[in-house]
Amino acid sequence: MSAPSAHDVCVIGGGVTGAGIARDLSLRGLSVLLLEKGDWGGGTTGSSSWMIHGGPRYLEFDWDTTRLSCEDAGHIVTIARHMVYRVVFIIPVLPHDKNNIERMETAMEVYDRFQPLKKAHPHVRLTPEEARQVEPGLASDIIGAVTMEEWGVDPHRLVFANVQDAIANGARALNHTRVVDLLRDGGKVIGVRYRGSDGSMSEARAKVVVNATGPWAPEIGRMAGTEVQLRPAKGIHIVYPHRISNFSISCESIDGRDLLMVSHAGFTLLGTTDDDFYGDLDSVDVFQDEVDYLLQAFERVFPAIRDYRPVRTTTGVRPTLFKWRRYEDQLSRKYEVIDHIKEGADGLVTIAGGKLSMYRLMAEETSDAVCTKLGHQAPCVTATRPLPGNEAELEPAAELARRNGVSALAAMRLQARHGTNADAVLKDVRAGRMVCRCEPITEAELAHAARHEQVRSLADAFRRVGLAAGPCAGAACVMRAAEVIGNELGWSASIRFDAVREFVRGAWLGRVPVLGHSGWAQEELAQGALRGLLN
Ligand SMILES: Cc1cc2nc3c(=O)[nH]c(=O)nc-3n(C[C@H](O)[C@H](O)[C@H](O)COP(=O)(O)OP(=O)(O)OC[C@H]3O[C@@H](n4cnc5c(N)ncnc54)[C@H](O)[C@@H]3O)c2cc1C
Image (cartoon, rainbow, N blue to C red; front, side, top):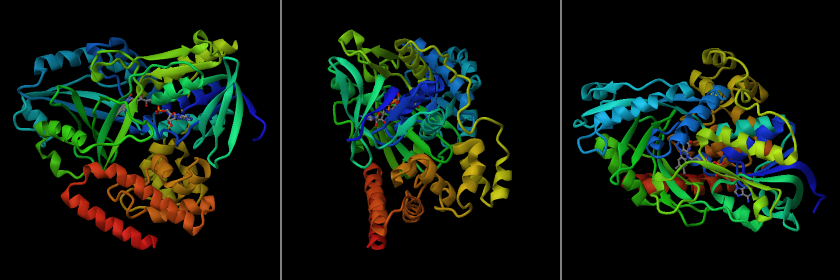
């Protein structure tokens, strides 16, 4: 083992919270080490509903969370302008829903007061005819609808932009690096022991260690002999590789919960469940009955939903703060910064709970606590300082497309991921050729991701640039992608094949719960074709 490195702070966990903390602390001039056992945003963050929202639902029992989320969403929308897009909901009301149209409109009138905080528009009430005119797929028996506006974001890119800025400000950030133990001096936490991507063990000393591991926080807490109590709750989504509607739609489930069909740039997320979770956080399965629960609910408001073919499912575990008795759905999304000095583990700070929509605020408060411990005085600047790619106005996508010989859609997608750096990404390697026919990803972007964005596998490329996220689910592009990435990382032919096999196996696990009768037949065909190619 090499001699330990030394840092002011070691942040464990490269989800949105840990990445936000690493950025904040490095901008305040501290030396930071950020460690993530998988890939950036690959935990709960990546399996969220991809929304920066206030959550009108919390108004019923947790007013503060709605206000804080809306305030922080406003900051996130400002600093990540190139990444966010408006998501407009239609909330239809059916005859036997728990809220009638008047109640629903009253709730929206209250929520309207918060909307300016996140630069969103107030609601509109629609007659049944108006609602069905803008979305003809709605059920014929709706008795009215209201609209609501939120923001969408690719959480993987949001996390990575925070990591990038942390690195630009002096942080060291390693993915595929697992913390296996904490270094102690008596009870005091003085650093971490970690296993790198090549399997080697290393140690790092730090004056403060931050536990930002979301649902895994109790595991890190135990390494210091402390207890972090969470009430983890599992959620799943069904993913469609296209937009089902230009609007996002909400509906009520059989047990009265609010479910959402969220229309993102080129795909749709339908979810989500919310169930207490007691299993292995590193192996969370999606079950057919969870899929059925979601479809049953949506069939009431959108009768043709079963005619659309999903491409996969996602699942994640919410790091909700512990509370006895309440239903999962009614648990607060509050967060807590815990200094473990009270339990004799000075040097360890945990951030638990919260939401993606207020990650910046959570990072600010955690960083404040760390700075107080270190006696370091420097103000937080993350509420106004743009994330990388958002430092200036974007040029028109058509200009970027024309100059680089790519389609306008490819240029738009590039700008959403890289902002003003899109041109440099295309110039960095070789522009032009598409890796996949159904998702406009260029070879240049993929090579750039391997060269500069810590992509080490095809699954990393899925997160960083959306590889295989389209209708082909990788069938048409993973071999070529393995070649492009392999050229950058020096992969032999056998490593490329292994990379493809590993990706296909992982993708298959997420697809099984949504394979219908014809889906299985097509899956066998696709698997057979791939086996032929690999052999
Ligand atoms: C289904 C679902 C939908 C949601 N939708 C939304 C939404 O639309 N909007 C919203 O605001 N919120 C949403 N949330 C909540 C939100 O996703 C989470 O609150 C947030 O993403 C948590 O981020 P995190 O960084 O704290 O945790 P994570 O993203 O889980 O990050 C923790 C990281 O720590 C790493 N780690 C763990 N152990 C170790 C170790 N030993 N060494 C190194 N690294 C380690 C993990 O690999 C992981 O990447 C949703 C949650 C779920 C489950």
